[in-house]
Structure formats: structure tokens, C-alpha cells
Image (cartoon, rainbow, N blue to C red; front, side, top):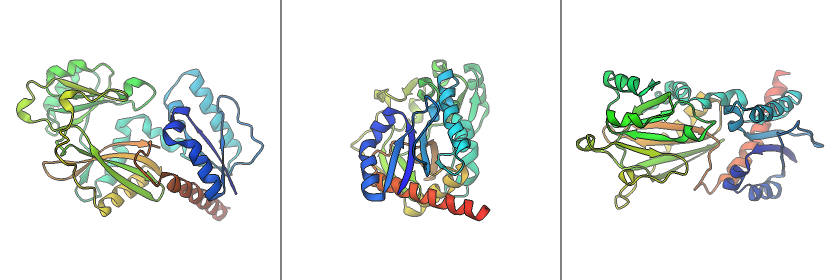
Length: 318
């Protein structure tokens, strides 16, 4: 029997169907899950074998309540060093910055044949953005503009696709990470990494933007809860691209786990029409696993294996 604590938002639990996962773990894997209240010092009657956490909001934010929650969590972890933490806080700090994520994964991704992380620039103003784009040979319109900050505010999820320099005036949450917008067959590969499991789900993405329409294309705003603008909706009469080959998928998963030191990840990948190369355009910790039928089994297996392996390592060290 394993006792595993968890802390994540109620909205995250709802999206994951967490109550069913609790029952699944108890009935099929002899795992008892305990919700941790990190608004106050953690006190439990049972000794935890491990903790699964998704408290990146607390990690990103600097308000008093978020810092209190983070402190309560870290105090418990420090006082119970034998408890295995799935989602090491130190490793997750990279997810605060999109620039840092790209710089961390870039060397490993580019070890994969025909795969890359898009070139990027960081701009702190509209004027600087215009100047840097005009000077950088690797970045031409259209471009994608994402806040460098990857969390802590709803603004960090607002993404702009800019067709020309006039559109840069829409940007209002600097600094921005600016990368090329590649034509990509309207297909995005949503990759879900869950320990040893790696699943790719092709989905419709955004449409291509032809070079001859850039002068009239201003901006498109995307983000959580924002409906895809009409000028960016894909043509669903065109079929999705075939899924990634298993060797491509396996390579991407292993390289990213190695680079980040994290084993529960969501990854967005596109195939560029121009040269057929795969571009890793986004990585995040502990995604929603929408469309992954084996999520419960994969996560339960990962929790058990992670705790077992960490125990073996500690035994060897001692």
C-alpha cells in the first residue's frame, strides 16, 4: 500500500476527472491518495510515500498567499526528506520563463534529426520589436508574440500573431518572446508525456498565412478562453496530417525529459511545410491529457515506479 499526497487546484482536479482517478488508484494499484491543504502547515496522521504536485501558480506568483502556500509545501518536503516529490520544485522553476524553457531544451531537441526549436528574439517595447525583426534574418512576418513570463497572470496566456509592423502596436505585456509563424499543414501534434508513456494526438491548429496577404493581415489574439478569430480558423475540409512516427515521438519525449528533468509534460509540435522539419513550439508541466485514454493507468504506473526508483537510489547512496 502506498500513501501519496497531492496538491493541485480544484479546476485542475475537475479537468482531470480526479475523483475517478482516486478510486482507480485504490482499486487497481493499492494507492491511497490524500489531498494536501497548503493554505496552512501540512499535518497528516499518515506517513506519505510520495507527493504529486501541480502548484506552478504558487511558484509563479509573488503575492503573500501564494508565497505562504509555497512555503508550507516546501517546509513539509524539507521536514520529510524520505517522501518522494513528483514534480521537483527546483526543476519546475524553468517553466516561469518561455525564453528559459527554449534555451534549456534547444541543445537536446537539435540532437534529433530534422527537429528544432524556433529562433527567437526578446523585445521590451514595440519600437525594439520592430527594430529586432528588421535586423534578424531568421525571423520574418508573420510572427508569434508570447509574453516571456509563462505564468502568474491571465495576460501571460495572451498570444498574438502579427502580420506586419503595424500590428506590433497591439502588444501590451512586455517583454515578448517573438518567433516565426510557420506554415504547418493546419496540424499541431499535442504530445503527452507521463513517465514512460508518450502519446501524440494530432489536432487542427491555425491556418497558414500566405505571404501575399501579409500587408492586409493585422493581428490575431489567442489564449485561454479566447475563441480562435475567424481570420485564423483552419479549413477542416483539409484532412489532418498523419501522426508522428514512433521513432520521432520517442526521441522527442526522451530528449525533453532529459533536458528538463521532469517526466509529466505537455508538448506542442508542428511540421513545417517548407522543409518538413519538426518544430517544438511549446512545453508545459502537467497538462490536461485531453484525449489520452490511458491517462489513469499511465499516471498510477509512473507514481509507483518513481517512488520505487527513488527509494533504490537513496538506499545505494546510504
